[in-house]
Image (cartoon, rainbow, N blue to C red):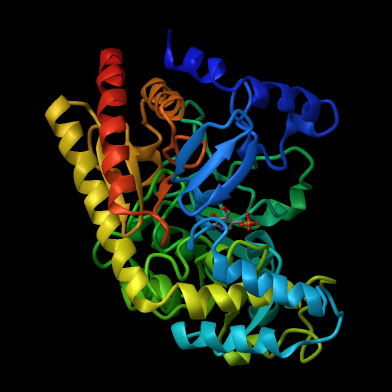
Length: 445
Ligand SMILES: Cc1ncc(COP(=O)(O)O)c(C=O)c1O
């Protein structure tokens, strides 16, 4: 039996649940990323580093809801904060102090965030940050990185997952490829693409569109295309060039914020962007995002200024209480050191297995986020990562699933995410399983 067949054999209840869901929900899932063929597992419950599916199979989870569950699943401290707040009300439509407290905690971690606004999600955070940058500069151009995903808003749904067989233009000036039907031409007309870790590509586009560009939005450490950390000097160069060409710099820290370090990428790499987008970690497992940064820019947000930011659920007491408990009571500084230690141990273990088996693959990671890249050389750009041997990845994915590990998010371009709930025993168990699976993967070489 193949790993794929094993997976199907052990998940009949999920198959049934998928059939029922697919009759009423497109794909049977809430977001396309939650689907994988022939159906995903349907979850019964989760706790700490584990999830259980409807058939009662236990999985060590490294997807952790695409890196959002930094504290681990069903953390008791966060659950308690949610329960206490639910008793007092979940939505007021009027401000509550808990949102201010969470904003202050975020500011302690991110001195560059002088003011912020809360959203429900990362996609809103990036969309509003771009609107604000355009409002502040009165320019419409937006620069983004090829292969970077910033949420599915029209303006940024460009060149996020360029297939490797599609001509995507020269590396210094990648073509803008719109990735959804239903986006009006005008919405993406001003979205220009550069390559990650490539200052020449950035300067080429900045010069070509000089005077037109409002902002450069990027993940300071890429997490689409596996984890691709910035090359030494790259982010410093980005900051210098954006200043030179008078372009606002937006760090999309939706995934890496309060994740790869206590103060996220700003702290880790020592760079001061003009605006920062956050989500995932700051909500403690509830839907919460934020964008913030320079006070003079944030002063342009309504009702202080002309850039509109609205939302019935914004800064609601339920999600901000969960986020506050997560950041102040669970994700203390020592937890980051522990996640880093486990991240280093896991990456080293994976490398050792890959080297021993002589597999044409490598491992990239930044603290607790990382993954196996099924390419022989460490990638520095999305294009290089996209050379991934997809057949090998698929075998790895179903192999791990069929042996009780969700090794990463559900796509070759995703990553593993170690939470505060993972332990040495989890890593050891996972490495043993990985070795068995990779031995089979090697047969595809
Ligand atoms: C870097 C980045 N930005 C933005 C988003 C969109 O966030 P959300 O899914 O909360 O809308 C994601 C989602 O994974 C992301 O990884």
